[in-house]
Amino acid sequence: MKKNTSITQDVSKVRICLIKGEVVAIPTETVYGLAANALKPEAVLKIYEIKDRPRFNPLILHLSDSKEIENYAEEIPDYAYKLFKKFS
Image 1: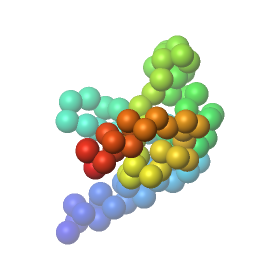
Image 2: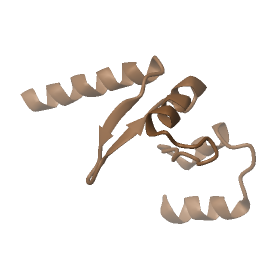
Image 3: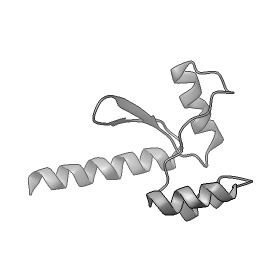
Image 4: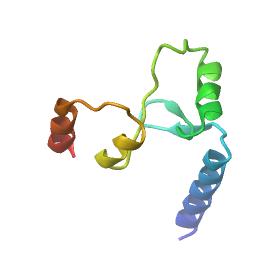
């Protein structure tokens, strides 16, 4: 039970950081990834700066649901919806 409480507290801290526009490190199976609130341009720029990555090199956007893409993309080709359906 103690471990779950710790995880809940950690997730809560990360959530607050993301809301504030901070960058957080997220462990994956192989490496640590950097995460930021995609709705905060200054937070996204921080990732580019930390990684010394050129602005023309896009970042990955993780979504919890394929419907969320409409909040982030101006144009969505038909084949994208087919891929969403196949892999959702």
